[in-house]
Image (cartoon, rainbow, N blue to C red; front, side):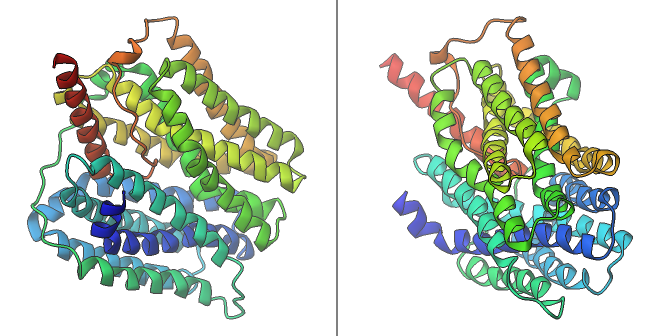
Length: 420
């Protein structure tokens, strides 16, 4: 781990700055939207646009990189991010903000694809798993740190938009001055949705549901907190709690994942998050309970992403994992686009509790479906299952394929050890 950090720290530091900027803008827009008089559904459209841009970029950016190269794509998209962040306070209109979020989603995905390509290229078979773990920790840490910046005094109304713009601009320096050219990669053709569902119905349905849950956290948590009447300091802590839970519970759940029937763990983890959301719906007036619920929901939903991918891999041959991962990313992306829209509609109908009600419904559905799938086929033997590799729901095709590549390498090493 120390060797990975020593070799990749400029890239990881640059990504930390990028994630601070991205984490701040999402929460900030949720707060400022309420100040501008935008209703919950209008804000849900704004927030959903980010995930639409992200999904489109995950399909198109690899082609851009093949045409003009990693460095040009990274610099161009990063510059657009910096510019777009400044324009939000200049045009406080739902349509303008929706277009801005669409651009941000596209550009951030492209930046992540490029940075992850460099990170993967710099990793060896022995260090790839450690590099992915460090990358996930950096991503989550950046979002958590960003929430602390929300309380910076901003009488002008512009400062909190300038800060992420500057952070994004500064992040280019350590990355572009430290990396070496990376060979262009070929985009993997995804499995058809029918084929993917046939391989793992639970993985397919679960990742669609998780797309909505994660986008609700990343896009609508600040909208909920603002409509619930929380102060800036409380909003900061509330949003951060989702990601603190994700970091704290990711590895314990991963340890269990490699030692038991993953469907049981998926069912139990989803049920835990569902119960936390139900409690928050009923007792949301207590801020301590809100923090605890956010911690448990984030701690359930983020590891569930890696759990479902690992479970799907258990039914795939190694040569099919890359094409399956592309399809799973697409399914998750569609869920992420629809999640804020449905939650925004629910909040417009029943008020702020609609946020937790929909999260409870999504996690409860996942737990129930996992229980149902246990009646449909036997679980593979624990010793025949693949490795759990921690990923965030914001993973791009590069990170996903790197994780799959690592899982394949570990499986091959274990097979060689058994044969010896």
